[in-house]
Image (cartoon, rainbow, N blue to C red; front, side):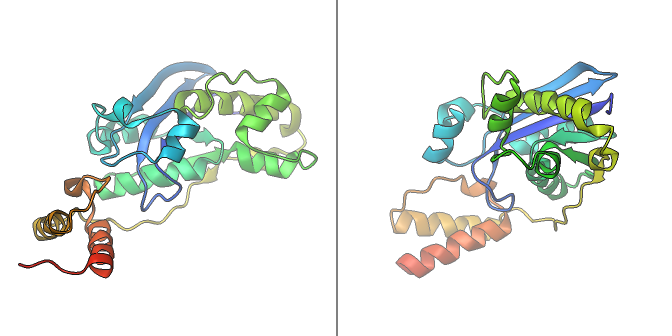
Length: 237
């Protein structure tokens, strides 16, 4: 069992690191078996939070309205994570969002990970489900605020310790930290010309949008422009 590591969980607007955004970060730094520091913050995603996400997490637009944008905190998050193995449940999902953000803001994020979901799938073959919520209920791990980042980070740590105590001796390779491999190319921010064109299309066609145009990437702006043109057509110059 590792004695020093980071426990990490994110809440997001959806499942795609390329198209969706972070709305909450929960990270706990464990050194010599004790929690010594943490990051716990909402993130303004520069878009409306889908109703289905609010239903699951309880996080709504008002709660993130005055929160920092990810660009304002990514440097501190990368510094917090650097040099530590990251542990989480389906941890590559969380890592992919942070890795893409780091690359887009010219930061380097390279680390190793331990995924309690993968460990559970390999060792708990008799259980019908491997979700964090199900495993907490099964093992009696206190899980009072499920689908909130800091809670899920913490209970993933409790699950990790339990699995180590029960199974690591006979399955040491399963618990070895693995290199986090997620390849991503840097995305440029929306250009001035794109932003002006998209704003003109939205205004002309009287379209209600749920995102902040000025916070888009160049690629996402292109997708939104293409979608509007295909659906509504052009507008006079």
